[in-house]
Length: 321
Image 1 (tube, rainbow, N blue to C red):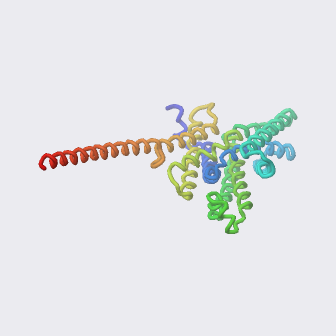
Image 2: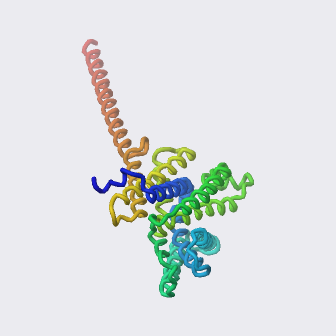
Image 3: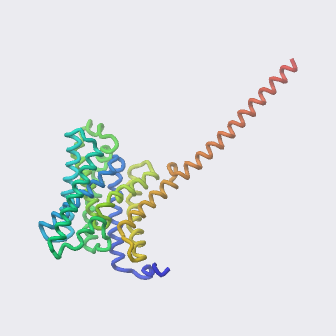
């Protein structure tokens, strides 16, 4: 119980980090729904890894660790990586998953090389840049929370404005194109929204794990509903839950990293949903199968009984005649 002493008072740092993680989880969960439904879950992994050299280049050009500058560099690199992936698929015979792996590893390796060069440069201001690899949520400040809230809010507002168009895009792109919707522009818009969600979470979760923050809440929400609007809301709630619970758990003891703990909490939500969600959950399916077997057994017994009774009646009729 000693580890939970922080619950007895409001710790300012804990509140700030929790709010930031909750906002990040909300934005990532809502936007990640589209990636999951389009079967582009690995695209988030490629974007997050591709963003790393953008952070390094932004620092090398400006010498500043201002969050907006680093986010801008990460967003440009992440969007460029996505554009390269799409170009490779369209212009060559390389398949989508191969293009993802190629761009992911190339950009991430380039980012690690740049970070190594920065560390060897002797720049005193470079401390903490490597936190973007695995994340360091404890370094989130009030201005970072404001940045996440503003940019994430803008992304969600854009999602709501183009709700019908994006819905058509993910479920029937061919029909969307046939009625005159600019599917390529919508695809770029959706990718840009995913880039925003990912670069906002690099400081808290890191490039290595950020894709899970997009995918896990959406996968958990998918188990509970077939409706897109409800799935987006549930994914946002699962993401916020993972952010807050992961922050609280990591604060309960020293040495527990916040970012990976947030991802583990999101994974727990996925496991719980897979096990207990109605209609789709393993427990529900087990109960349904048990009921079906029981109903089948009862129906079989009734059929056997009816057949035996009919046979008995025929035998009596034969004897009577």
